[in-house]
Length: 196
Ligand SMILES: *[C@@H]1O[C@H](CO)[C@@H](O)[C@H](O)[C@H]1NC(C)=O
Ligand SMILES: *[C@@H]1O[C@H](CO)[C@@H](O)[C@H](O)[C@H]1NC(C)=O
Ligand SMILES: *[C@@H]1O[C@H](CO)[C@@H](O)[C@H](O)[C@H]1NC(C)=O
Image (cartoon, rainbow, N blue to C red; front, side, top):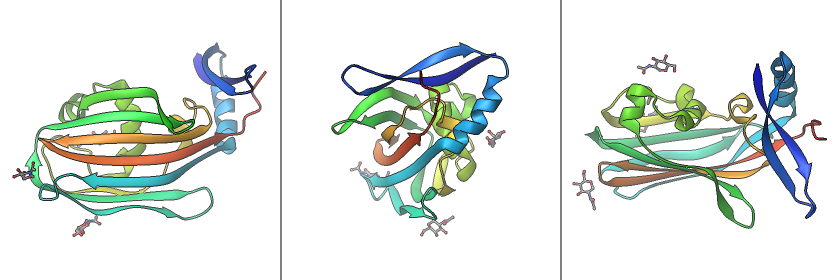
């Protein structure tokens, strides 16, 4: 079984660099997974929503709610006032390092096509973060209240892909010609004893 996990190296400049490595280790995954989830802190830190045409889309709710030190819940309720069959998403991930810098993910996709065919493997990861908390799990058209309820980040979905850091996931939506932005920031801290 091919298992993907992260190894950390101390560079000469003293900065932590991360690499994804493929390691062929049978059965290692399950043991590792338990330890990883114990050692990971995955925390939502900010959530910003903006509709650029308020006669088209209106945010009723866009907020984070901390339930304890580790767990923060995201709630969103946006009303689409007209049905649409034409939804574009520009999905970008930024990592903080003297301001946010683009980091690995920069993709545009067609949500209606995605909901029919699940054609994009990268968006599948993003979609996996929110599908269980939302009512958008259907094909186009979309109209009315679009809900994310008490969403929290689950380390098992992303934890094996990301190095420790602060991230910003920017989703720019285009409903016909009406732009909507949702930007969510999160920090990811991992305390693994796997280096060297
Ligand atoms: C806002 O959306 C409405 C409804 O679709 C549309 O009639 C109007 O032209 C849009 N406004 C702009 C500035 O695009
Ligand atoms: C979403 O917001 C609308 C408008 O405030 C409200 O009527 C509706 O009940 C809300 N839906 C949920 C699930 O909270
Ligand atoms: C909703 O998501 C589940 C799990 O991914 C899937 O099995 C189901 O077919 C989806 N439902 C619709 C209506 O797309």
